[in-house]
Length: 525
Image (cartoon, rainbow, N blue to C red; front, side, top):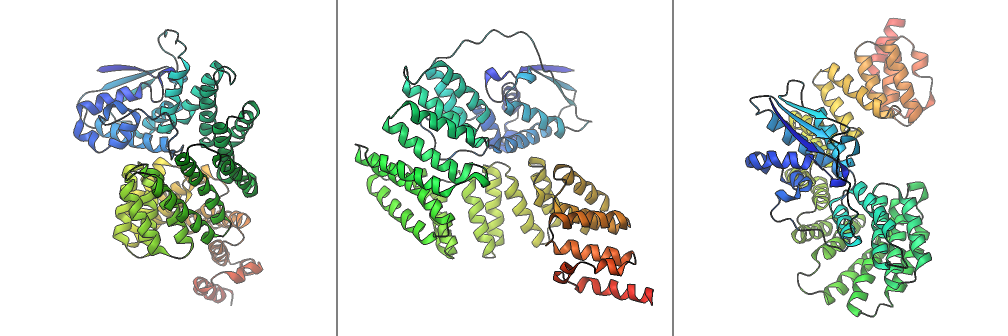
């Protein structure tokens, strides 16, 4: 038996230990690795010969925090496929898993679930491990580089820890430049991790300690975005967001460099356009975006800042769609993808336009690209599954839904769609198992309760079905399918008055009940 050992301590960064393990497999099996390049390069960048260190400046777009779950799924699929080729048992020991970064723990957890009991690969995960040398305190410049790299790669827990170490090492009086980099980096990480309130406090602190124009301008815009999109829905405040955007624009107007003044102003105006679009004023948003594109193109050299221009055109595509002009939206998305072909978000949006226009094959193709670039986006898998099912490709749909749930077990739409597919196949055991798995994560979801109620009624458990459907209606009194199915169950239980007792049933479609009602009346006559 072969045994390998890897150190997973978070002081060695995101994916410590597991990155070395995956790189070792990938180096020895390049053909297998070629089908998982996006996730392997994200986890172990040294495998990518074209990889460059992240720029010190903040990138235009950040990865969503849930991307690490997608990376973990792809890496687990890669490892499981490799493990299936083993001719003799292999044990891999992972030390210091108890002190590992969140990315490492997530990947080890997914790996443990993905490998079958019969696998020749055994994971030996230890919370502790051999003694480590104390880590030297990095200089602020090194911490700042690490912070920028972590933010750019979407590893927000590590970014937050690094930023906090940096803030502890410098003061705004002693080193304002580094202090601000750590402060805004921490706020960015916290916003991505759904801790926007703490991020707000950091920007308030920055305004209290300095009046540096660059810092106060950036803090004003970032504060606006927290109020516009990152705070919980009940706490978002468009008026406050607009106030801070006005502040950012006022400060940007005072910049000495005319070129930088244009770029900054256009960038901040996109926040105003976002608020206008949300407020039901897409025409006003369109004017801002068109004006911004014209001003940017006037000051940028050909080919300069393509992602900035792509982002504005992407915004414009969404506004065109809101204005009922899908042709112009599609034209913008085609241009966006030509300029920034590595952004999975654009393919998802274009696929939706193709789908709405009945171009099913083009939509399936774009969802496939999004799955590859994302990688393994649950929403792309789900949407592609819907299209596959519409085309009568039930097995392909089932495979995509299974993948979506493997990446995101809480994807309720995918769960319900898979349950329905299993019911259509007559596999009530699998359907019930999937429905109960969904309810374990979302015990009060009306659609899942309704679906399980239908399954239980099909299996003759009418009392349980009645109870489940009643719970579904308590959560969503407008769920017509639950009213219909509960009425059918009560007809089957010979309780016609109870079936018709609630006036809301009048809104339900009665066509499916006529046969059962006629049978019930014959039994009672």
